[in-house]
Image (cartoon, rainbow over all chains, first blue to last red; front, side, top):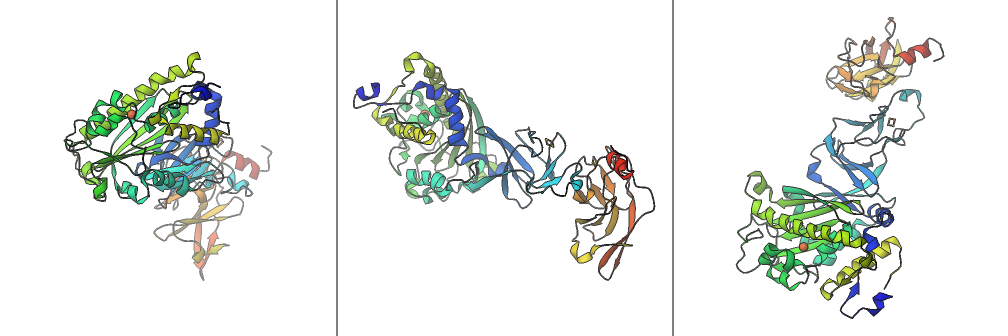
Length: 377
Length: 119
Ligand code: FES
Ligand code: FES
Ligand SMILES: [Fe+2]
């Protein structure tokens, strides 16, 4: 095996096929996205009962909405009659019910079968039994997560636990009061790359000095190539001359009041597997979620969250947004540049990770573990 | 007179479906009024008791035609013909319905069944 002959400084990556083989992607959909907690929407997008969004989670289309009692609900977006897709729009609003466009089976916001042609002649058809099939939901940090597993794993361990592992405790993130922040900007990126390339990129900073000139200016320690996620509880410090987390280092927006002294003037990055990245700075939060659509394509939705009065008063957040928008584009360009190489004959056995990237090896172990595939090293 | 249900069991905004042939529904509006109309929409076989009451109109749950609870009139297609209205009485806390003698306007498949013809 080539991996055993690697010099001590290097460890192997996943093989190229892991990023190009549709069969492996299908396994990931089944064993990762359809099994774990998956973030689908900002709670505030579902403005009132009947507002909905449809999101692909793994191979399934999921309908997320708000019921009359204002609770968040999620269902398989599949009619119980003969399987027609219930809602085809990506987002919208219904007044009181979801109606299948095929034979008009009609479901309440609580999922119950409310009406159907000739339904009263079939009193043995249970309105709940033949209602929409529900999916587990959780709200945290102002976001909606769903889990398609029949027995969902512990949200506390899998989602909150990732944040605790990175920051030391959950209180550190709760100080940012994310659920009460407002979305100041949202940008959606269509990235022609495998979702794992995007995670791996987010996990390391070996590339920072090369492709992120603006970010390295604001966070000078990024130039040494060690990821912000390398040490528990560590946040990269702003440069001395830097006033705020903006594209030119100019002053940012109003600081989030809960942010502690030792969190001020620092940037924290957290990866919540399998598809969420959270970036914390004193005056805003940048929240990414990935929607993997194909082995070589991933939609990334990114929100910039500020204090509500900052957004409501129409303050100029453009320099603030531009910093991470540039970072995103620089990163996604790199991922897109990498994707074609994954199918090269030369990359069949994969590449190598340098020491400041070795923690990505743990991510690869995790992928193997989820898929039940054995280790190559 | 046909007994329907105790008034106490029919909160405002809800409907009670009388399982007679053809079925009749009693609606208790948000304003506290009681009305009885044929339960079956005149367009297709849908139960108006499953529909949505707004003021003195009930919206069919399937294709959104609305029927006036007082007059039985329909507001707009796809349903075209009115439903019958029936008299409602409350005695000793019990709701009763006196059925209209008119011929019901049933949707095609239900009308066929009632006529004893095989569809
Ligand atoms: S498939 Fe939805 S009503 Fe028939
Ligand atoms: S069934 Fe009532 S409008 Fe069509
Ligand atoms: Fe980057």
